[in-house]
Image (cartoon, rainbow, N blue to C red; front, side, top):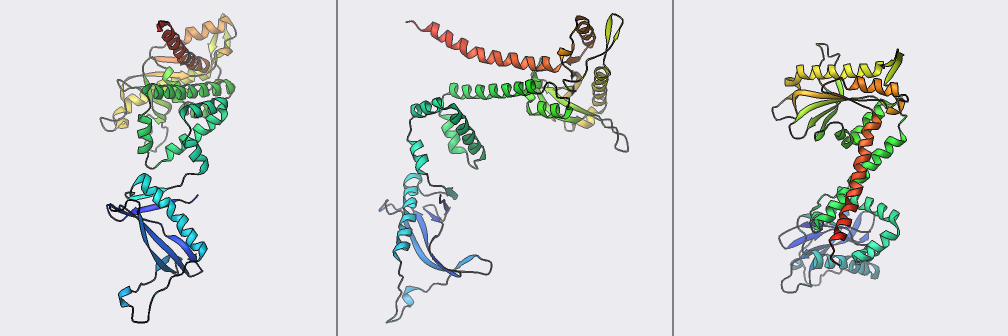
Length: 386
């Protein structure tokens, strides 16, 4: 597929790439076309010149010096012969330039155009109903095509034309697409949880929750956004040691109030040995709580230094804390459940949340989002008077 590159030379002209007609190791013949606005004859939209070029030592091509026609003496003249293949190549190369001028006008600035293939041309003339029917019959193809189109859209240097087309869509269509993408991300996060419940790699869960930070928004009852994962909250001494790094520093999106989240893994034990009629909590759970409380203390002490400029990031009034740890499946006896619940509800401003509880909130959110469209459709059906 041959691309066309153009560069403005005036308000009404744009020079296109040279068309190579003949070439050898050191010399070549080119036609240098110019697209122009011809008010007298709009169809005559391309002119140009033939040029011989030589190759420099740097392998770049430079134009030969030209001789003006008015310098020709009696008995002298110029002759430029084009072979049949060269003339055909020139005609074929000029056709896209005429078409470009007809569809786009004279391009402004530096532009790059790629001719449409027959396959894309056929796709372009399909109606929305035709495309819907084809893709509904083959959803795997639709998903692959959408992924490629989105990758293309993200990579555009100038997405203005695409944005104009998107703005032509009905707001409800954009909302449905946004909801579908959101549901897909939620399902992907839930699937990852189902497949990795036994994973005891803390770094894996750090990365997973960083990539799916919306899951962390279920930790607190207020609207949450992540400020930083693996955030430094102070504590280093004069030899740059003993710094405190909390797994997630988050904030209330409305008040900017900070909160701290420490994570372990779903495999981390919640309880320890039995103690008379109850159970001790595990060293990992009690240690995690003391760890996040220590981070809170460090943040409070170093807040002014860490915050930087007054408008930066977050406020630190009385940071709430959370520890995400373990799995309630470990609580296989009523006595264990009782011991865990009694322990974790004794803390003010600190929540202890097992991983399965956190992802169950994600599951409930998916169910809610999947149910609402059905209810809206049923409501619309009831409003129809016949």
